[in-house]
Amino acid sequence: MRILAIETSCDDTCVALVRARERSGRKMPCFLILSNVVSSQTKIHEEYGGVVPSLAKRAHQENLLPVLKEALRKAGMSEVKKPKVDLIAVTYGPGLEPALWTGVNFARALSYWWEIPLLGVDHMEGHIAANFLPQKIDGITNYSPRSREGGAGQLSITKFPAICLAVSGGHTQLILVKDILRYKLLGETVDDAAGEGFDKVARLLGLGFPGGPEIAKAAKGGDPKAFAFPRPMAHSNDYNFSFSGLKTAVLYGVKKKLGIEMNAKINESDLKKISKNLRRDVAASFQQAVVDVLVKKTIRAAKEYNAETIMLAGGVAANQELREQLGAVIKKELPYTVYKIPHTSLATDNAAMIAAAAYFHRDKASLTRYKTLKASGNLKIH
Ligand code: KG4
Ligand code: ZN
Image (cartoon, rainbow, N blue to C red; front, side, top):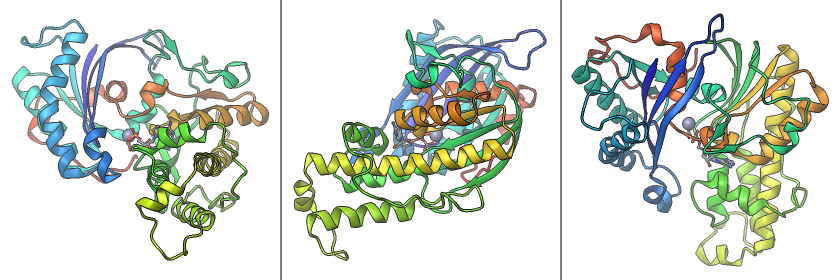
C-alpha cells in the first residue's frame, strides 16, 4: 500500500510518500521511502530563539502546496493528477495547534477532493515508528560506530516489550511499548523537554537555533567534566525528568566564569566574552549531564520491564553522544537487548515517520474522516 503523509506540528513543513509492502506472517511490513521532503523554517524562527506559532502557521500555509508537489515529483508521480495512494495520513497532535491545523485542513481537503481515506496520526507515535523505517538513506547507513561492533545489534528486528526514550523539542518521555500500538507512558519531564534544554543553553551561549546540533558541534573537543552540572532526578524513584534546573545551573556556571553578578542579565557584550574554549567546555559538560540522566533512566526502565528492545526517538535522538553512549551501556549491561535508533535524518521531524505509524492504524482510515478530523495540541500517547 502507498501512503501520503503530512506533518506540520512544529516548524518543519513535511510531506512524504511511503510504500509499505506486507510480509506474510509478519506484523512488520517492509517500508520503502519514495520521497520525504522537509522544508525547514529555521531562518524564520532563528532570531526569536524558538518557534513562534503564528509565524510557523503562516509558513506552513505558504509551503504545503510546493512541498506536496516536490514530494509527488520525487516519488515519480504526476503533480496534477490524482496520485495512486491508498491512504492520506496527517499529524493531528501533539504540537502547536495553529501549525497542526494547517496540515490537518490541507489533508482534509485532499482526502475530500481525491476521495482517498484519511487518518490522523499521533506525532510521538510517528517518532517511535521512525525506528521501523529503512536504515540506509541516500546511500548513508547511520549506525553509530560503537554500537555496530556487536552486542546491541542495530540490524536485529524489534522484539517486544520495548522501552522507547522519546526526546524532542516538546517531549521527554519513557514509553513502554508492549507491542505494536500498545503503549504505556512510564514517565515524562516535569518542566522543560530535553531538546528545549539544548535550545535554551545554545541561546545562552550565543549559538544558533535549533540548539541541539549547535551544542553537539560546539561540544566537540570540550571537556565533559569541566563543569560539575547537576544530573536532575537521575536517582528519583520514578521515570520522570527535569531539565529546567540544569539550564539554570549552566547559566550560573557561565556567569561565575565571566564574573557577572548572579542576578544580572547576560547581554550581547557578555556573550562576546565567552571564549571558544569556555563555550566548548560548557557545551560538552551540559550535553554529558543530559546524556547521563537519559541513559541512566532508560537502562533502569529496560531492566525493570525486561525489555527485549531499547529504542530512541525524537529530534534529540540525532545526538551522536546519546546514540553512542546509550549503545555502549546496553552492550555492557544488557548485551542481549536489541538496540534500535532511527536513521539520523529520520530522528528529527519528517513525514515518512508519520506514514510508518499510519500503516499500523490503516484500518481506522475512512472516506468520511475529512468531515471530523481536528487538531489536538495536547494529545497524549495511549
Ligand atoms: O522531534 P523534533 O524535530 O521536533 C519536535 O517534535 O520537537 O525535535 C527537535 C529538537 C530540538 O529541540 C533540537 O534542538 C533537538 O531536537 N535536536 C538535537 C539534535 N538535533 C536536533 N538535540 C541534540 N543533539 C542533536 N544533534
Ligand atoms: Zn517531533
